[in-house]
Length: 267
Ligand SMILES: C[S@@+](CC[C@H](N)C(=O)[O-])C[C@H]1O[C@@H](n2cnc3c(N)ncnc32)[C@H](O)[C@@H]1O
Image (cartoon, rainbow, N blue to C red; front, side, top):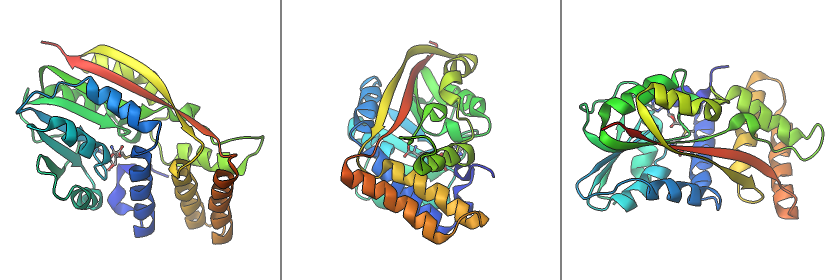
């Protein structure tokens, strides 16, 4: 099955709703907020600047960028009409923020015209990450910064014991909803090949002990298993209930390393 994040507009309304909920809830997780704050602190928010998020989804990160940009403009780009529509609704009233439908491999911006580019959990979902990195390098001003923040999916787990059914869902998610589970291992050489100087690379922990961050993996995986006819609705519901039970019992435990690369376009 092709990674549904490559063409979000082709998924069912039910799956789109699950995706929207998962993106919005992940952005406010206790471990995610400091990861995003740290990389946004490393960008230059000079007045009048233009800052672009490629693969903005529902705009959860783009809205955080707009708070920093104050006297600058933030533009969120995503190929999905459905997600851009959702992003516009969620950003209602934020004046320095715009959303547009577009493909990160072919952007409308002039060469050397933007101050920063952010890609948050996007490159792990595209077939050719290098194309988006080369395009980001083209539109950035010399000295402009790129942030790539992505999950190290290959090392992610919800498993607490051998054969844990919740981990079966996490593994299914990695195999069916992710295009490049090893993106974080490869990202420094991809960025260097696209013309960037690497300024910083770090890996932080996203620990799932509460909240619904891991529930997205369960629901998206179970939704697809039901669609395939592999399991019934009853088991899909039971898997989500087991996640909620562990959360309430204080026994929920998942882990996902999150890599962040900051790179500069050479002067
Ligand atoms: C996991 S979501 C991340 C959304 C958002 N950055 C966030 O973290 O909340 C991946 C996003 O990448 C977008 N995407 C997929 N292919 C893309 C492409 N070629 N160019 C730009 N974005 C793309 C999807 O539509 C989706 O919104």
